[in-house]
Image (tube, rainbow, N blue to C red; front, side):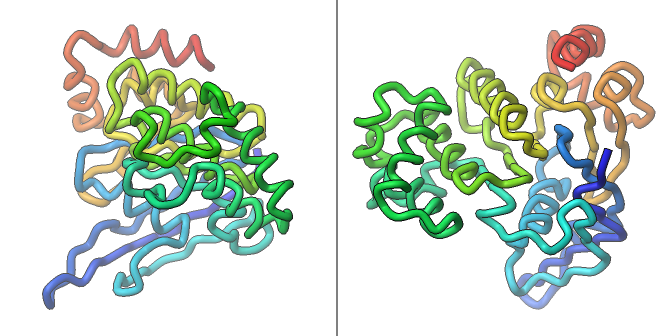
Amino acid sequence: MTVLASIRDLTVTYRRDGSEVAALKDVSFDIMAGERLAIIGESGSGKSTLALAIAGLLPASSLVGGRLEWPGHGQPPLGGRDIGFVFQDPSASLDPVMTVGKQIAEVARTHLGLAWPQAYAKARTLLQRVHLPDPDSALRAFPHQLSGGQKQRVAIAAAIAAGPKLLIADEATSALDTIVQAEIVALIRRLAAEDGMTLLFISHDIALAAELAERIAVFRHGQLVELGATARIVGAPTQTYTRALLDAHIGLDAEPLLNRSELHG
């Protein structure tokens, strides 16, 4: 497989109230083109900072060390065009005073140079692809008129509107109920496969990671502590912390997780 992104000795430090807090410490690994990679860990483990660093969305006040190179892309990617980003809370990431259709169409206009009629036609097609009922009505709707799951589908449609090579989903299911979580995971998986996108799935939930990813990277205290194929991570973890994440799922031990990861390839 081709290496899409190469991360070497990545360190990210935030400056807060005159002090410095290291969010990532000497992180090194590769993201392979076309793979589904899950980044898991508890809150504060550095996984969201990693996603922001890869997407070029870190605050200007942060201190960044190490290297982030894109051998599989040829040049630094542009956020929105080459990298699609789905945030945790669609209520915060979507503009409350702009219709759903205009928000998706704006991405297509900005990055693909489409005229408004063509951009709206693309937005309608994308709403169909994310399985929003009645896409014509959805185009005219405002975010507050949609459910949480529907808003996240809109956010996903906007994230893929420019045909990115990399889709980052940062805790994209954590604000949803269990049934809707499963639907969104299945949707993200399908879209990544259909469009040939590399998928970076950020989550604290190792069960969802096992459902979706081919590889899992485990983070703790800003460090990468374990990385491997999903079947190996859930079936024979080498780190006590990874085992603790597995054990934290009441009623879900490694065996059913292993079966689920094998079932979904």
